Image (cartoon, rainbow, N blue to C red; front, side, top):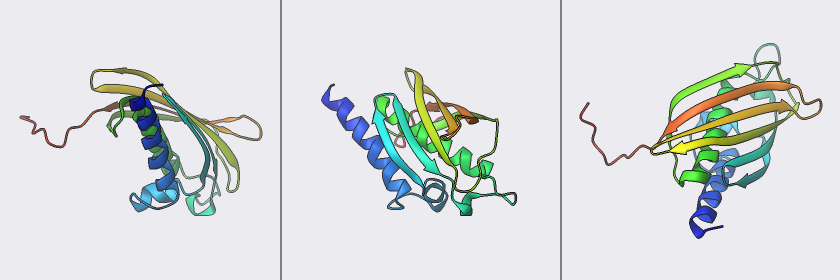
Length: 154
C-alpha cells in the first residue's frame, strides 16, 4: 500500500471516529453517529456497527429516517475519502428504506466506493440488522471534489 493510501485511510477513520465521539463536527453529525463503533476502514470500504439510541427515534420508537440519511451521507463520504484523500460534497443522493430499526437494535453498516473518475465518485451504503440480517436501508451517492479556492463563473 502506498503512503498516500495509508494517509487517506487514516484521515477517513479519524474523521468518522471524531464525529462519533463528538470531538468535531456539527451537532446533527455528532448526534447521528454517537453510537457508531467497531470501525474497519480500508481503501474503498468502511464497515461499522451502530446501536440505535433513543434520542434518534421517531414517535413510534423507530430509528428516525433523517438520522439514517445523515449517517449514510457521512459514512459514504468517509469511504470516498479513503480513495481520493479529501472530503467531497454530495451532488446526488438517494435512499431506499426497507424496514425499520428499533431503539437499542444493533445494525451493520457497509459503505463501498463503486467508482471514481475525474472529480466524481460514487458510493453505496447498506445498513442491515445485525441480529437477523434484515435489510434496513440502502443509500447511493455521487460526490464531487470541491475546491474552495476556485471561483465559479456560473
